[in-house]
Image (cartoon, rainbow, N blue to C red; front, side):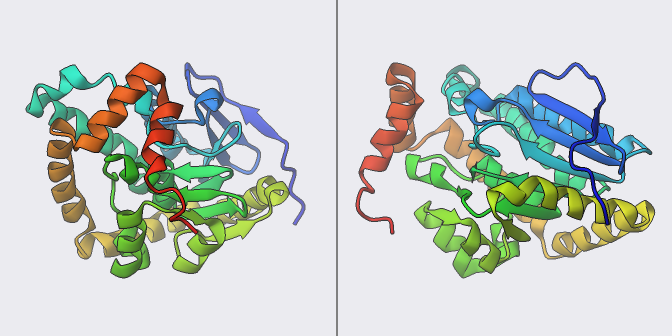
Length: 287
């Protein structure tokens, strides 16, 4: 099979942090485009990602969707600078609950849409970026990518909690209760990603896999994705996540001392200083 990896055709749209393209193989390329912020997820990007994915799902010219990131990494997680300004919203627990559940629903879009989604991942996929790779149907990751729930070390809870369904309870507890970074190779062993490639192979391999998926009858692909997802739903995924979000909402309204300090340092000295301060107590413990 001969595949041209440089023939994406732009489809203009009024996106601020997203690039949307559809190529000749009926692949929609949805690119996270906040490179200066490591494609960190703020509310605008989450809303645009949902809009782009729904657009591709409704487009009869699209058979498969690829999510990738511009710049040095796929996604550095939640935009913690924006999060530091949420104090007023947190004063009203109900309003914050509504905000939190809406954000969750928006972020779950890759899982809920009917067409297959491929995550093409490089550099880093931390926190929400890590979750995004889990929600994709196929994840192709470069060998130098770091993944994980590093935010828990700063008193910030995880988000969607797909982990136990993908890796089992022991591995899920290891990753979530330590907040350690995980290599792409270990993620492949655990079943968290589909494939690991060298950095210079990512674009071509993503195009190859997405093209194969796009050439299989689209209706059959959509049926297969939906009934496989229902296996997880039958095991209680949606209800478990909903219960978790209720608890996490209260954790956000009544933050841990570590998180309160993290927000204060972020506001006073910047995000990098807050991360460094939080990581200092783990110095020498990671392998």
